Each structure stands twice: as structure tokens, then as C-alpha cells.
Amino acid sequence: MISIIITIYNREKTIKAALLSCLEQNSNDYEIILVDDGSTDKSVDVISSYIDNKKIFYLHQENRGAAAAKNKGAEIARGEYILFLDSDDALFDQNVISDISDIIYTKDVDFLCYSNIMIEKDNNRFIQREKIKSGDIKKHLFESPLNYAGKPPYVFKKSFFINAGGFDEASKWGDALIFWRRFFLLRPKVFIKDSIGYLYNQDGIDSISRNRSEGFYLNALDVMSRCYKENYDVIYGISAEKKWQFIFILYAFKSKNKPIIKAYIKTFLSGRWYHIPSALLYIIRTKVIK
Image 1 (tube, rainbow, N blue to C red):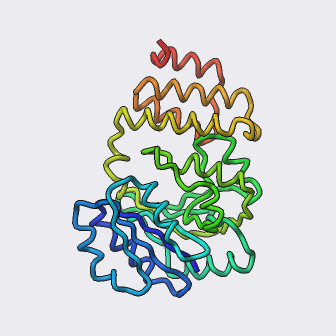
Image 2 (cartoon, rainbow, N blue to C red):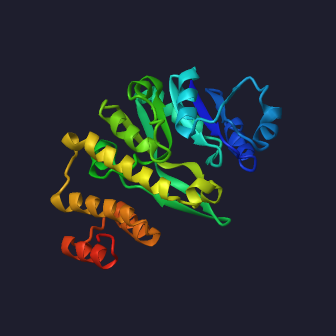
């Protein structure tokens, strides 16, 4: 069985669509775990008529953050596999769970992700693609502290997730970045499905994501630094130039200049590295280094 874990915090406008995308699946091989992380809006009222459904388990807890809510969901999950769905997103179609079940049981995989994702923004939809082979995910993750493993929905064998320590509850941002690297050090058997399984609602990103405070950037900097330090000995294919680029990004965060930070991270994620002398000159001119 697959345990679909949906964490909720003040998502009264989007939680119904997320929940219905699960209940409308054409497979019976799943349960839904709703973890309400101390919502203060009408999220509970929206889902109240569904809570009695035998496939749904509802839990309310005091606000402890998304990572703690996800970890709690994983802890109480009855399924051999767990899938995390954000409460402002949705499963792409009615076949997602049946497609996943066919793969994880016949191939006995420990982790499954997708190569493509449907993104919805300003009432428009477009597909974002990720060109990574299953054997390259670990290498991809350790090439950059900001790299993720393919596209969601991410499906974990529960035992592997628990052994990796779950998500980092101490971080307000980037709790998954550290987790990914710990998880893949366990050498899971991976499968990447070449299709779309997830609808990512960029319009639903919460105010924390839209309004980046100084504290947010400092926390992000700390998470990236920890990712780099914790995995320094197992980093794959990191050239001196890439290491310098990471250092430049740290300085960009230090500047607290949002356009600079955004530009550097965009380049960092794209893999298009600046020439080191040019990058150094740029951050000096923009007063990142004083």
C-alpha cells in the first residue's frame, strides 16, 4: 500500500483540490494521511465532510513546521511506501497511483520519481522536464547543494525514509536538501518514470515563499553550507570552478540583495557557470564583497 501524506497549514483555498486528486484515483492501493499543522483558517471546515472516508486518517498537531508534519505522517503511515503531496498541489491524473503501484511492486524499487512535472501559474500550464537517468541521480545530487532528485511525486520505501532520518525539522527552508543526500547515501534502488505525475501550483506558494525575509536567506545559507560540509567527502565530479561558484553564491546571500541572489541561484541551478574571474569581478562591483 502507498500512504499519501498531505500536510496542511492554512490552505483553505487549495486543500480540497489536493484531496480530491487523491480520492479520484482509480486504484484502491492507498491511504491518505492528513496532518494539520495547526491551521488557523478554515482548512479543517473544508475537509470535514471527507474525514469519515475510510481511506483517510486525520491528525491535528500544534504548529511545528512542514518538516515535522511530514515526519509525523511518515511515522504513522501504514503503507510500505510513502508519497508526499503538498496541500496546494495535486496528483496529475487518476492513474498516478496505479501507475506507481505497477512499478514499485514489480521492480521492487526503494525510490521513484518522475522526469516531468506540470506547472500551473497565472492560469497557464507548462511542462518542466528533467533529463536525469536513474543511475545519475546520486551524482546529480552531490554536484550541487541545491539539486533535487528528479520531479515529484516522490515515492519512498518507508523503511529507507526512516533510516535516512526524515526531513530536517531544524530548518525553516531547505529541509529536504539535507535529507536527499542522507537518503541516497543508503544506495536505494531508483526508478524514474518518464511521464507527468504531479501538478505544481506556483500560484499557491505561501507567503513565506513570496516574501523572503533576512532570516529566510540566512537559514537558506546555513542549509546549503551544511549540505556541502556534511557531504564533502562524497561529492562527485566537483571541479574547482564549481566549488568557487558555490562560494560566490554564499557571498551573494551575504549581500541581502534579492536580484543578485536570484541571478546567482538561477545560474547555479542551470549549470551555466560563470568564468571565475568574471564572477569575482561581478560580486566586487555589486558590493557583495566589501
